[in-house]
Length: 455
Image (cartoon, rainbow, N blue to C red; front, side, top):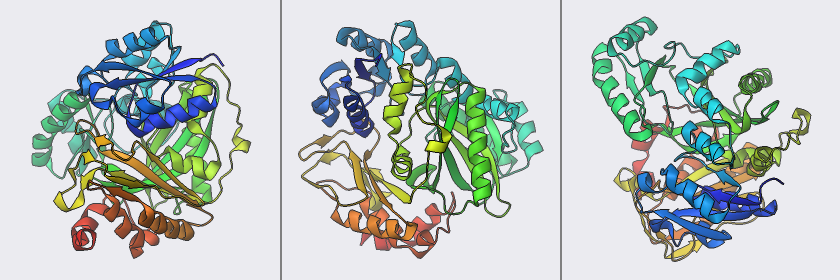
């Protein structure tokens, strides 16, 4: 193994996840942390830790100079960016490589192509992958944007060319809305990603959000089947499943093959996810973007394939070829993940940091809880509200849903408000159990089921 010491340039549950994978590979871990995370679970678990700055992310987890200084100070051979923060920042990937270190992820050039939505769209078209009707590349000129929107036909989605996580996205139903929302989307994208560039695409009503997990070594790539991520609030995923129960097998094969073809066309290295919109009625799929990193929802893929995706991406970064052929990847059973956030559903999902007074983690067959929590931990108010991910597996979807109900009942996080009540009601809802939902289904459902959740 070319990596002996790994700096983790992230925090929270993904940092814990990376520490575990690295340890199994015999790699020592160095946890970079802000002052607010000095007593985090990742800091406690890592072999050593280096402080990189104050609580503000801009001065710590987004500070490239501070992270590189931490790598030099600790003698790290490699840097793992996790997800979020600098994980899809091409300049960070280049800076790590220029410092003589290994970046556990794709090259800066691959991130520039596939991490920029407009560039990724062009790459998809070149690879013969169907895309949603939209602008030909990024748009910075407002007048050109208006012309493109009218040509596509309303409603249209205005999206940030860089970044993800639902930021910098607006839906315009007519020209007046478009003129109002476009500068808002650009400003939000600029604040979140340092890039106010936009692109525009047609809104597909009642679409499913389907994504394909891939692994590549720079020469070849494989897929690990798909996930369904259609249950979203404000375009933030809350519930994910693998596989999607609505895909016919012939469509699944075409979808996954298109993801592999696109990944290989850019010589992709590492773990990545290609995201699509799927129309139930026409059975057509459209590429929308690629996430050039490990994703929050990767555990459901691990549960149905038996693969350790984080471990494999570390191996590939160390220069090893893929150890797995496409024929080796088999799909078994059904997995569901729910995101447990420090948010109060009764107060419009307001963040709810605080001290963990008690903690009971579910167990039993097919049950996994990836978390940053321990009893007595003080959840800081400075970062994303994700506390952990409850993942269950069973042979059939119905049994997995029943197991999720049981596991949620066992889960106890005392001292703060969480989104557990939301998932308990969702898991029992007849429409969810029948998989009759789409990307715009959840928000009206929340209004109708508020009393059940908050009782």
